Length: 325
Image (cartoon, rainbow, N blue to C red; front, side, top):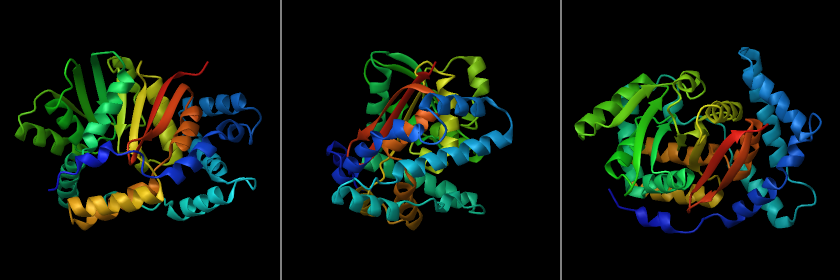
């Protein structure tokens, strides 16, 4: 497989999409205030819904987050022709359609094969190194920490991090996923590679109450996975994390943009011709959130400090911390 890690040293690849997203980021407070009173009142109402065990409350959060995202994506009539045009391209690109591996009934053997291949693609593209750089920035000068990766699939990143531990850092790593089959496969792959110091747990990223009781996580990670979540699910995961870990949560995911979509399609096709990886990689970009959208979702989750930005040529990050008082 080709080594394409050099692309991760390139600047952001989608300047027009970034320009549109920055304009949207400036409207987040206005969007939060546009539906039900002031932004503070909206956030307090959402916080009460997130604290409720009622399944109807979860559905309300899902619907409300989707409505606010739609409002954020609406381009004001005062926007210039360039932003209007890019917004139309973004609307055409966006998709909530499933990826192949998310479709019910896909054989587990096909999923396992594709997840092994995805790990090799991430190594080839240098994706894991980007995620580590972002994690170290989120940790700051802390050299001893427990990182807990949510919705991590087969834990390829956790295995990579253990084999390429940054100098001077003592990082404990736990890889978790909702699918016990993926967790079991990750554990077997780690044993085959003689990696013994990764912890493995089957866990729902939307329910971290048990970890809150344990009180041993310093920073949650969610890498290349949030695009699988609906807006309301993303809000709930962030809310759970910021109430559980002092470092709260770092999300790293693909950046949604036309140039990113085409570039990802070309690079993934070059790295591997496996159709499932190629299709799902393209669909991942179409489903992804942008920094402005992450900012809105993290604010809804109650985060007191939100830093969302483009990261490298094809990624964006969200570091959400603290609970708003």
